[in-house]
Amino acid sequence: MIIVLFGKPGAGKGTQAPRLAEALGVPTLATGDVLRAAAQAGTALGLEAKGYMDKGALVPDGVILGIVGETLASPAYAKGVILDGVVRTVPQAEGMRDALARLGRRVDAVLNFDVANDEIVRRLSSRLVCAGCQTPYMAGAVGDPCAKCGGKLVRRKDDEPEAIRHRLEVFEAQTAPVFEWYRAAGTRVATVDATGTVDAVTARALGALGR
Ligand code: AP5
Image (tube, rainbow, N blue to C red; front, side, top):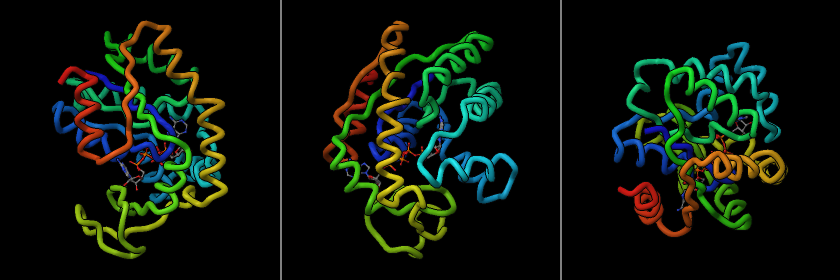
């Protein structure tokens, strides 16, 4: 089962991905996490990506499709995958379709997590993430230990007000058309109300997948 999680920055994709993955028995792939880990490790890929990410701009399609092609071909993803923020432009959707077709596979469903912009700004302005495992937190203080891995909680550079504004503009201009692209391609798509408790959103998302 290959599920694309779609939605504005801060819609809750990273919060929901591990929950859906556990419920469906498949791993997750989050390009944002892969790129941040590469930046932390100081690899050439990470250093290139960091310049885009810190400003809230998209990393070039070729970089993303390289990560996706390599990852999805690995046996660990043979059963399926929850793709968190992996498809953000129409060329990426086309590239993913072609990469999956080479493996005899396709995207099974796209879930669009729907949240209003004022709630997005509220969420991202107060978000902390674990510098180690990237788990997002709604409460706590910079430097607190992560409940999952013991890493330190930090504020993301792209959660500064200017970068949040830019990410929302980029979403409208470059990412929003991807949902329509999937609909036109005949892929199963569903919009999920992503407000309310985290449990309620998980239940709605699983309901949209018929689980
Ligand atoms: P990425 O890390 O994927 O960032 P994003 O898409 O901007 O998404 P976020 O991680 O900010 O939000 P989210 O939807 O995961 O929400 P979360 O669960 O954390 O990408 C970062 C950058 O990498 C991009 O800007 C780009 O530069 C680059 N990149 C990555 N993929 C790319 C691609 N394919 N192409 C090009 N560039 C790419 O939740 C947010 C907050 O809300 C948290 O504090 C959380 O605890 C809280 N929250 C969650 N659910 C609820 C709820 N129900 N109620 C209240 N609060 C909630």
